[in-house]
Length: 294
Ligand code: OGA
Ligand code: MN
Image (cartoon, rainbow, N blue to C red; front, top):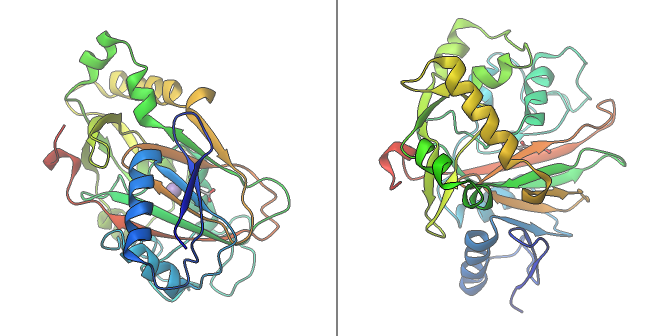
């Protein structure tokens, strides 16, 4: 059986059926999935049954794994998941209990509610993220996605000229600081220094121009900080108008892949006293955006 790709939004997002991701992946299905990711940027698989190893093995078909930065910024705590190749996106602590409201990892995790793209704060950023739902709450906890290629296309020519060639500084500490989450040790802070990334890039899978934005982007290099920050805030506001946004309502067994190179995403609120167990594997981009075609 081969895959069926069904678009769910006018510009991006598709659902893919006809494949069991726990089984060895057929080359034709792999190629079909990659083609769908390049075209739609966000693809959804329903009713999958995956353990962590199967999720990691599936991700490897699409590139080398970006080991999670969670261990670098949460030193000396017990991690629930065995592998550094999988990021714990749950609200559970190292013992599998719902995290205390003031737990440091919980406060850090709340920053997923800000519009962002994964690992833009690493010199070689994230490419694809694969997020799998083990347990979802009855209400809330959706994930929203914004299409940054369509958002780029919709900019006026003058704005396109203004931002062409700009480079933003990205830092995980900037996104956390927006929520006043600052309790990191000097060693943790030093392990993830700020990095430069292009504001406009060419999405390699489609050769389309795209914005590259995130809550991690703090200012524009070579511009006074307030000017650059306001420019970035305006671009995020533009790119997250409802016409560019798709809401994913999670069901247990969903695996969603998104392309961080041409989308942003954010988690939506839910009652964090309830369990939400999602786990993510992210592939590595080939190089810093500064070393890629623009
Ligand atoms: C992520 C993320 C959003 C969510 O896994 O990278 O931002 O809804 N998740 O949990
Ligand atoms: Mn994320």
